[in-house]
Length: 390
Ligand SMILES: *Cc1c(COP(=O)(O)O)cnc(C)c1O
Image (cartoon, protein in one colour):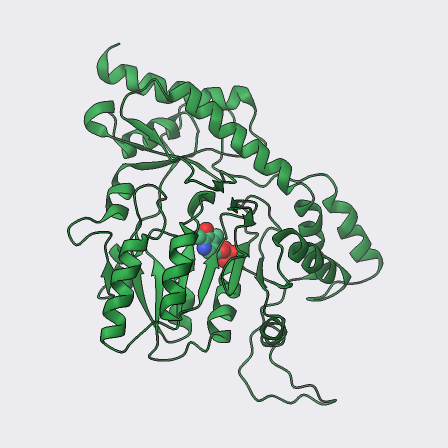
């Protein structure tokens, strides 16, 4: 970017952070010639992932998006069906609904969790039932590591008999009431994209306690071959399996996940302590009973009090070669989903729109040094002082 005026090293939002053990798994795969979309690393990664999540099984795939797509297929979502989805999320949460030929209906956030509002969900399900058009699934996202209010959301979904897919792409390592994020719905989805808390460069995992459906997922992800000696096909399959090389990276990364969670949480605390004196800045607090992986430190700023706008601050950080971002733009406001139904938190109050207007994600790389974090903090403090001439 032309704006950059500093020679300082770039600080990224959430860059990959290798443990040092990844190479060993890659070497082993080379030595044994397991250069394939299956193999011992894939099996081992799946085994360790289920053990970590506390689910009966898991299927390693080549993206989190693919895992969501498979979950929808296994819940029999097809053309003409409706699927509910959190509105405040990355587009990948909802794209698979479209792949399946179904129609997304977006559900607002509530102000304390930033995630799916139980009130909005309740209203949406009530209306859907009246029209005899209940969704085939509800995709609940745990944004930036913060847990959604699963206790309420699960009980509402149970009441209406609608299965849950947890999009835990950003919340691997987070907990809610002692359970791992991603293990509380019919299916859970993790992502190992390059920016996530642990990464395989690209990849995903589908977890569940429904081992029969996971077997189907494994088959669908490998072109849906029938179990006969020749190539026989009855269903449309996909080429979604994870490579044995990347699964090796995943095994090593999973080994340091808890360290990464601790490091991200420490970054959050340090930001909060350094910036809490700025009036009008509010950090996203954990909802009761939850423990966030703090994938990204996020906060909202009241511009009328802080004197800085989110976009102004992002530009100021960029000038110092620091990457910060707006929080996700709600999907109900995306041109792609124009015309889709949306249920706001209250009839007159759309929480996600307010969060988008006032929210910012700060650099949260676990390999960021304290001195680098201080650079970020300093820019924010300077911007604040400039506005008020303090
Ligand atoms: C990253 C992400 C995904 C998609 O994961 P990929 O592995 O990139 O396909 C889905 N949902 C959310 C909320 C994400 O942040």
